[in-house]
Length: 198
Image: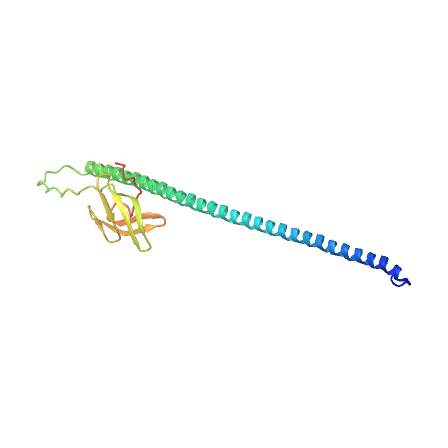
C-alpha cells in the first residue's frame, strides 16, 4: 500500500495497517512470554516434587535397612543361644554315658578279681565334682572381651587367663560366635546358660 500510494491521503491507511500489525506482534510476544513463564514455573514445581519423593524414598530405604540389621542381629543371638544349649546338652549326655561306662567297667573288674584279704587301703581324696558352668553374656569389643559365667548359684566376670573354682582356666572369650573356651573342665567350651536357670 505504501509503494502504491501516490497522494497524501493514501499514506494514512497504509500506516494505520502497519501500526495494527506492530500492536498484534507486541501482544503476541506478551502471550508467548506468559506461556514460557508458566512452563518454567511448572518445571520447577515438578523438579521440587521429584526431589521430595526421592528424599522420602531414601529415608524409607534407610529405615528398612536398619530394621533388617536389627532382625539379623536378633537372629544371630538366638542362633548362638540355641547352639550353646545344644552343645551343653550333648556334652552332658556324653559325660553321663562316660560315667555309666566307667561304672560298668568297674563292676566287671570287681567280679573278675578273686576276693583277697588285704590291708585296708587309705581312702583317696574326694575330688569336688565339676561345677555346672555356663556363660550368659559377652561384653566388650575387639581384644577386650569379658564374659559373665555362672554355675547356677554364683556369677563371675572373667576374661582370658582368669581361673574359676575347681581348677578351670579361661582360655579365650569369643564374640562371633559368642562363647567361652576353657581348660580343666569336662569340655573345652562352656555352654550357654541362662542366668536364672538352676
